[in-house]
Structures are given as structure tokens and as C-alpha cells.
Length: 244
Image (cartoon, rainbow, N blue to C red; front, side, top):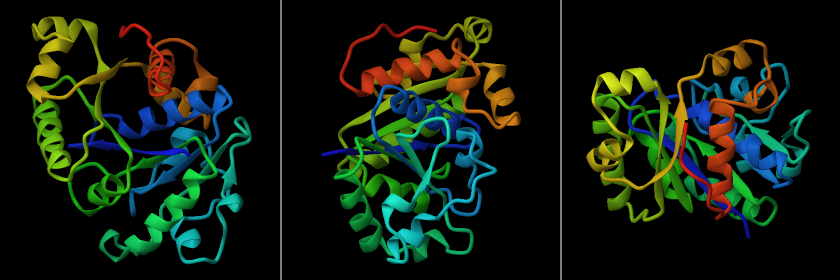
């Protein structure tokens, strides 16, 4: 039985979507069957980070409404174990049929090892939709005070929702800036009140990969790409050191 993993952030600008794509493709590269679902209705960008912006794709509501099956989801040309459903363009998050969404995910758990739900930034309806049906949560934050505060608040809301398996990713970490701020990753964990699953460095290759329509895992092997592979390894229950 597979797992649904919601990828959330308390605020925008944390690089949530790029982390989601990096970890998902890293898992697919190891042979895991992965389904990525863009839940960011109206501002969908997961296809860009996955290198799928030129591919015609179904939306998750196409499947929820019964018009298509999960096996018709777009297949990644570089990672045949990875499929993708985009977000609908003209359906507000509060109009999503949650019962049908949950039923789709139950079916997906029987077909895939991991289902990634890339939620919109913030703590509104899209956040709640992805979190509600997730088996575990990756909460993405930056090292700056505003991002940490918002991650802490998001963590509190997830706890109220009964979500106990929440792990934090500190993304876009610049060693020199963090040193100048006299901030350690332990400080971020203490301030957010959340356990850590990974640290991802600030890396210009993330933007370059998206610009050239290439998945980060294919474009680069070091930096953020390597950090996402380490997170993917920990998701599978294996131990690797936390490092930049």
C-alpha cells in the first residue's frame, strides 16, 4: 500500500514545488512508482519543475469526475515510473469534491508507492485539502524568521488536524547568510517546533533546470539535487546524514 505525502509551506517563496519535484523524481529514479498531483489550483507550476510544461496533461478533477482513469495520467518521458496530474484551471478549491478526491487517492495508494500532493502556499483551502488526505507531510520552510514563524503556525494547524507524521525541510539555505544571522539548523527546528527530514542549499541550478525544461535530478547531481536525493532516501526509511 502506497503513501500520500502532502508537500506544504506556511508562506510562498520557500521553494516548496521545486523540492516536491526533486524528491519525487529522485524516488522514481530508484524504481519507485510515483504519482505527482499539483493541488495548487490557479497557480499550478509543478509541471515546470518536473520538466513537463510541454506535455499535455490531465487534471486531477478529470480523474475524480470519472472521465479518465489514473493509468491515463501523463507519463514522464525521463522517468517512466512517474506520472503526473495537473491542477484544474477553473474550479475553486472550495468546490473540489472531497469525497471523490479521497476516493481517487485510495485507488492511487494501490497503484503507486508514493503520491505527492503539491499544495498551494499558505494555510487556506488547498492546504487543508492536501493535508486532510495525506499519510504524512513535508513542511517546507526557509531559514528566514518569517518563513520559520509561518512554518510553526502551519505545524500547529496540522497537529490540530491530527497529522502526527510531519517533517520539516529547510530549503534555500545559504551558508554565508545563515552564518551572518548567527542561526543554526537546530535553531530553526527549535523555533518551528518540528522534526527535520532535510536541508536543501540555495542553488542556481534549480532555476536553470526549470528554465531549460529539465528535471533538476537530470540537470544536476550536486547541491539541491543531491539534497533531494537524501530526503528521498530518508522517506524510504533509510538513514543518511543531514548535510548541505
